Length: 621
Image (cartoon, rainbow, N blue to C red; front, top):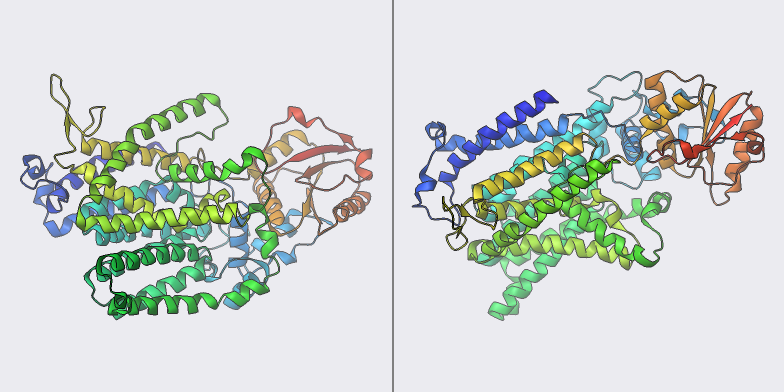
């Protein structure tokens, strides 16, 4: 980690000087005759202008991939990642026996490489047992064939490496989006720089899930939307290749994650706004049938066809309701405010996230104070940057388009939450649908900070007459550096598992069992879906890695509608096991069996709580 920080700070010194030198080639919203803009730091002025942009993109890419690869396997996988591992291997959770005691190796069997599995098996298992489209899982199936097993199981490093690489690929892609939207390399570079260190981006990239691939498609679709907006403004036809590319990107996005359709819905809202705006300025309804609009209608038709393909799969999936049960539920009192704070927290964490999730108050309080101070200082600066961009005709429409995507997506989240009873704000990862738009808006605002217009500059009275953009004597470039550094340290917070912490900590739970149970153990849980199988897989995997427990056993007591079914399964299993043993009831949501009452319950109040694992301990002698 020390070497990582040394390398990171070396890169930081170099990229600041390179960005300053390259700013001479793209100077939006600034006075090109300013002597400060003619300065070339160090020896970067010796570089040919055509080299500057690729070098900077390479730097952002190196920073981004480094952050995404550090501690890649340090955090244990959780239930959703186990789903990725199992389905990407062409395996199924149905092979795990229920209602009887099984050894860890049997529980972990779906994580073993399966040479006989095919892409057809991957698609079939997803269609019948999961609620996601297959594109990412097929890619992961092909990817993981390139890596050997790890202790007889699929390599977690291989599984997480794929989304990390795809997440890093979003850095140059979002540069293109920023540059195309604002016709400014400076906006593109600052957008890419913030994407590289975004704690939210790093969080998604370090999970063996499909969200980074979905983000790539969101970036591509938004880029097409930006290009289409320009053609609508200029009343010129959208090129055929853009039409086909846009349809293809949208089709791939839907095939990666169904929530990509939320991004498409926000684009529809933006296009409706553009149509209304054009009618207000010209009052000719026939404009809606002009060449640019006709080709946009073609994109809409093609995208609808690509989406309708998945409707039968969704309707035939019997597990869809059970797998999404966790985002449904009733609210009482102040619970109605939770979605608002959850949405706000995710927005904040896209830029800054210090260790406010720590269990130690001495860490939480200073981190919270620093974050609060940072946002009190940064938010007015960023909002003013957006306001100045809105004052320029060449950038006003793009700000409105991207802001429309963001506000439209957040509005859809609240509609699903408050009117349909599906709380999408509970899953921070679902905000991928508008995350790139946030980063581009941030880059556009920071570009104004980097070269602030004369009317924004405030001269503080003092001995050195410091030129600043705020009330704290910090000039524009330093403000950008501080905001980027906050993002960098926030990314470090995530890779150290101090922010966006894992929902499940099987490593800590296994340590607790090792310290508490000198006898053989039976770990029992109620089972409804593969989510509960994944919870126990996490424990079994850590037991296999530790290799210190004596003959541990697992019981997945299936529970459909009758909770007593799990109780009966536990009762029958306990009668067959030789004593003594320790019984750990973990996330066991059923009446306690009579046989359990013959065991001595342990006082768990003195034992630590473990994230994701609510437990009771019984000593059966």
